[in-house]
Length: 80
Image (cartoon, rainbow, N blue to C red):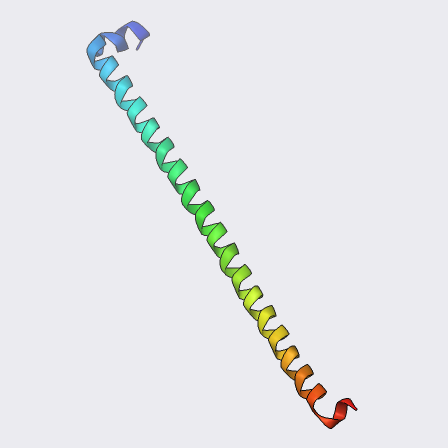
């Protein structure tokens, strides 16, 4: 089939409608991809924040634990 035979199968209105539909589908895929990237970035940042909170809590707990041990030693006769 030649190009003229293909275009004669579809009218100009049909070609335009098909082109608009293709553009709409591509635009929707682009938006879905952007939304997916935003969601993945949010989940990554949220995971990093959760991990940071965990380590901050854990380190804070150790510092408090060390402070208690230090206070206990200083209050006892072992510090003398």
